[in-house]
Image 1: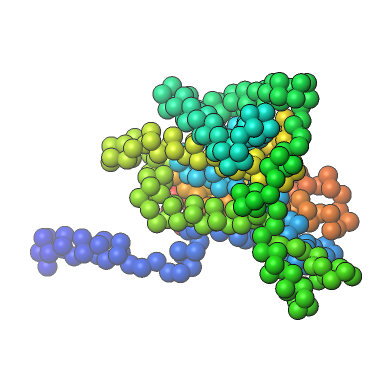
Image 2 (image 1 turned 180 degrees about the vertical axis):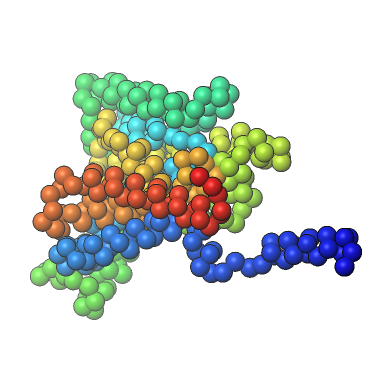
Length: 375
């Protein structure tokens, strides 16, 4: 065999190795949400062993899915932004501020409900775009910029509520002014109530002595959570914009040189994150009928933790909306599940901190083993 023939054989061997299909196990192990799914299974098994049977009834399921959904909506936005290589520590404060804007537009300015919601989203989107522009134009870390807005938005919420109420930090009466209608039903209450009543009549779900179902329907925030998770997953995995997000987070300079509009992508992600916080604000304000200055307190950290448990890397370019979904569900299960056990509630944060550490170590180990990266 001549030297040229040997070179050709070598090239063909390399090409063949690159074209080899990866095994199903390898493909699964490379998925960023693997750690979150494993954590979900372990947490479920844990509560199956130590919690009362009531936790895994339909009512118990809805009890922990409702807070999980509220956190999960924030976590989906945080996960997409982290995949894009940035952070937003102001989302918790944005929940309070957006609640203020929505409440003021509805009760003080007396705007229609739908218009009040739109005003809240527009204002939040403007702040999200402003955050993004500061980060991109100054080169400052998004961690620092959004940390500043964490305090700015919380302070504006306090000042704004005192102005709107004449000194109180809580704005009440929102539900009464909102009234009933299709807009209210989209953002508050339970869905499929007729279907659940029918299942109760058939004896398929638990009922009270009066015959009414113990679970009247699916909380609308759960439906929003599922829909948002599905849309985010589709965007990340099936669209050009999703490819741009991964590219911008993995190596912004290389992405820019390849024609990716990095500035536009990251600005949109900041807007999306702010709008996710606004959605949570509208859902919780209409459900409670009031808003206050402490709404969303420390939720920014829980959202980021849920995203990290879901497989997002702090360095960007890697992550999953599905993982954030399961990360949020784990939060909900632990927060509510402990009430079904004899375990002291103070172990909640210890448990979450341990889950965060284990998830990071697990995701890092799997990623290095499957991609061949060195320490």
